[in-house]
Image (cartoon, rainbow, N blue to C red; front, top):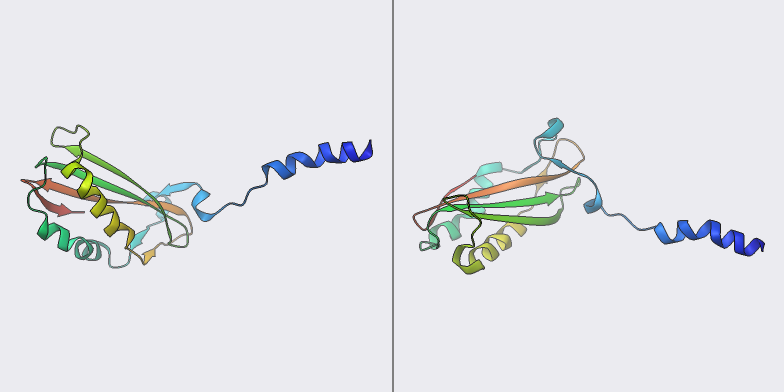
Length: 140
């Protein structure tokens, strides 16, 4: 009987114990509470990383819209996950170049390293690309 009571008492601890990673922490926006999460070198670094695709992709369809990459970065500066959003010039969901463009952009974003922060929080950072006349016009 004592073993049964012990088993009942310890079972909840065994079933709910899981290892947590830095990616499981609550996400704070990069701009909140003076967190100031950024990539080292900031905008010049981002523009350089996307420079080749910006020069080579000259016939993007649909020809106008926006792409946003939301990168979740741990408190130690490591990549966790990414969300992507694609909208056309009317702010309607779309897919540029039948999904090929977003795959290329995700690959470039995954190669970014040296994320810096002023405080130890898991954050997200946004990379936005403006598509105009079939070209990547601006990266911000």
